[in-house]
Length: 404
Image (cartoon, rainbow, N blue to C red):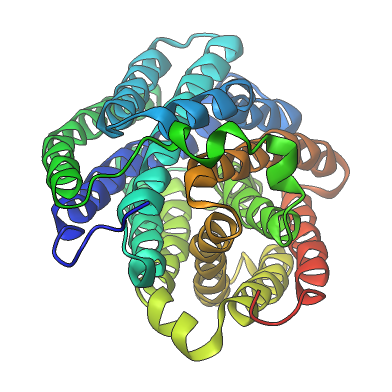
């Protein structure tokens, strides 16, 4: 596969980053509000976990199919558009959800939209970025997700206010704002399509179905060296982010912390992840991918195991979230690079879709497990479970040869 020459990356990367930031702002505005909406309908911790898992359950079924579509598509912008529209539809369904089942349905639609957008975006970076710029491309793409994880919860907190008791009008307004932001994410996609066209004219990229995707089954990809351990790291890192989004509002409710402060906490975590991802390329050059992934797992595990013990001391909790968020943000873009470079060029979309499938299983199973753990241990048990998973992934990852 020919690599696009100098000057073709910016035409699609920066509009893609803007669209990602807007779409993820919409999702991360809606998702903490989903927890508050469920609590308002008398949901317990297990039901909160089920609703959070609904975000992943339908995408689990569709992930590999969408990965194959991405691999064979000449242009990835239509798939990006499908993702954004699905996010907007999910935000439109949620204000109408007068039962816990409908809340779960709205969460599932949001998950489908995020999955389609994520696979298309990751495949764009893997397909069009220059070899030496792939870490930067994945770094900025995932940094855009962190921007959404920063702005979304903060907006949700501002809309819901400082009262511990949440009113239905604030919930409705939050979902409406999320829907508008999702629709705004369509605009940069017009520039993304132009950028893809210019990249193809400069250096035609054959559809991946004409290369190794025909021969590379999911099992063959999983058997490649480094794929399994890096997928485990990716699952642990993403699952921790999911548990924070779903269960930090519950932890706040237990400790009578206002939604505005919970939104600030989630925003601080995301800001730290943005900072780390903005410097991903530089850090990789200096320290190597293996050291960074291992460090991200170890420090993030320690941070989120400690967090429930210090949540009542807001400033200490913010420091812990800053440290944990910085290292949590390092691992995801690097695992994308490691996985995409562990397979042939034509199999990259399929490998990234397989990684996304693993992530979705984590998003499905870990919140369910966290919901069960919360019953005897409280909401802090969900964070301890995530910290344990990160620690287990660190043990597996640190056994690998340094630099892999």
